[in-house]
Amino acid sequence: MRLSGFADEAANGIDGQIEATLALGWRHIEARSIDGTNIHDLPEDKFDAVCKKLDEAGIRINCFGSTIANWSKKLDEPFADTLATVDRAIHRMQVLDVPFVRIMSYAIRLDDSGRALADQHKEERFRRLREICARFLAAGITPVHENCMNFGGMSWQHSLEMLEAVPGLKLVFDTGNPGITPDFRKSFPYPNQDIQESYHHLREHIVHVHIKDGVRDPQTGKETYFFPDEGVCQVPSIVEDLLRTGYDGDFSIEPHMAVVFHDAHVSASERARFDNYVDYGKRFERLLERARSNARA
Picture 1 (cartoon, one colour):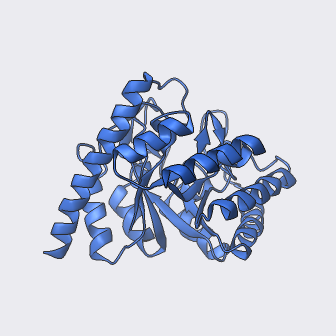
Picture 2 (cartoon, helix red, strand yellow):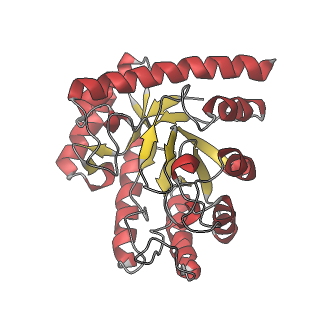
């Protein structure tokens, strides 16, 4: 079990990301972006420089937070573009010896009012995901799907349907996403998903965990994020149950408090970002220790 995080929330550049990781006494980063560019899209010379700095600092990458098939990617985009990104990611993951890659299942098809269309083109999604996953698996890399704002995150039932259709695909469970993601099985305006219901239905497929805590106002769409020991997503009980039921995978923090990857309107000073990330990590360490103690009781 390793602790890591999306260090691009602490700093844009790799130097600051490494500094924040070392400030926590951690040795792993869940790599997403460097200076605003996803790690699989960096120019070769910049990627090489990142690898050198990681090696010098003794920092490893435990998961690639890729943009492959994510919430911003639509099914009408050429699949060849997706596969080109997959192949770049595989090469770079092999260079860095990364075991997991976070993927998604393309944008949800919505009408102009924000309602989900009845036809989500599931078979085309699943066809693409099978090819994506087959390439990663052939390279010895485990693809993990996040319960985020994409088809597989529309509800726990959508997740299970997708897993049944895509061999080898596993789950990364984000503890905060049910609180900020509509339950598309319900009536519009969609309420948020139920964290405990989602977790317990998906538990057996979880191999990686993101730590986040937040809530969405279903009427306005406004999202509010919290420290994991102060929020509404029952993070302590989820972590405790994971440990009690034998989870030995990694935990990666994704605060979303000082900066949000998908929302440029959420920003803070460099110092505030760094301090928030480190504070968040320390709080999670304390939460984890309490969960371990309770799980052993």
